[in-house]
Structures are given as C-alpha cells and as structure tokens.
Picture 1 (cartoon, rainbow, N blue to C red):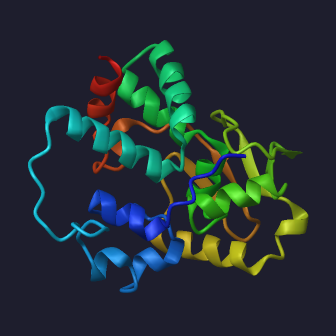
Picture 2 (picture 1 turned 60 degrees about the horizontal axis):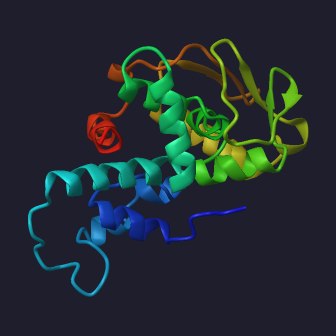
Length: 209
C-alpha cells in the first residue's frame, strides 16, 4: 500500500505552519516550527520569490493533502466526488475529508494524530455501529456510532490520546464518551466549524482549470 514517507516535521516546515502531524509533540516546544520556521533544504532560509496564482493554488492543495494524509491519486478521486455532490464544491471537499473514518477517529481522540488513528483503523481497532471496519477511507454517515474495539481498549496510547483530546475539547459535530472510548458522528461539519487556515477555494480553482 502506497504511503507518504516524508518526515512529518519537514512537511510542516515546507508549508510554513503547524499541520499537527506528530500528535502531542506539536503542542510542545519540541515542534520543528517553533525552532526552525523556515522551509527545509539548502535554500530554505533564503527569502523566496513571490508565488504566482498557480503556485498559491498548488501549495494550498499540497497543504490540504498533508493535513489529511492523502496521496495525489486519492485526492483527485475525493475531489471528483465532492464536485459531483450538490452544494459548494469546496465545502463538500472538506466534508468528504472530515467524514473519513481515520479522520473521525482522530477527531474523537482515538489516535494522537491522523497517522496513528489510521493505523488503529487498519489494525481492526475501530468499530462502526458495532461492526469492524478496517478501511481508513470509509465514509462515516451522520448518526453512526464509532467505538474502540475491546481488544484495543487496553492500549495506553489510545487512552492517553483520548484524554488529551478531551482536555482540548471536541469538535461540535461529534460527541465522545472518553471513559467508554466511543462516540457519535452527529452531523457533517459546516464550513464555519472547520479550521480557517485552509483555503479550499484555491484548490477548487486549481482543479477547475
């Protein structure tokens, strides 16, 4: 199975902002952005030339891919799905990404990062409405109950991740029982509820050419 093996901190530095790819490390002063906020590589500290409109669109697409841990081919298919749906394509795109089982599991605190949540899903650690689902891209529907499988509840890293997520607060479109390690996907998130550091309109412009 294809994976993006680029170092996580290097990806954040390339985008010039925290993408929260390393779990709890991103909330400490050990974060690479805190120590080296310039781009990686030999010429990273030099001031680059201004990006063209295409360059801005491309960077935004790359950033979105990295945030959600999606490969290029997968991302194109997800965009095509969002474009087919009724409504605003950019908002549809974010909703499809946020409905993925790995992302929902991460939002509920069953993994300290999307990468860890994806691994737990693949290792049969997540149930959807009581049934095992080990496909990270599975689309969770409003009303679905997501829970940690019994054999995985003893894992200390899952408990620690859930407690850390609870201390920061959960998204409005989910509800979580940290003690029971289960939650409910209440509704598709609205654009106003999602991070403002993503400009999905640039991605739509890129793929509309």
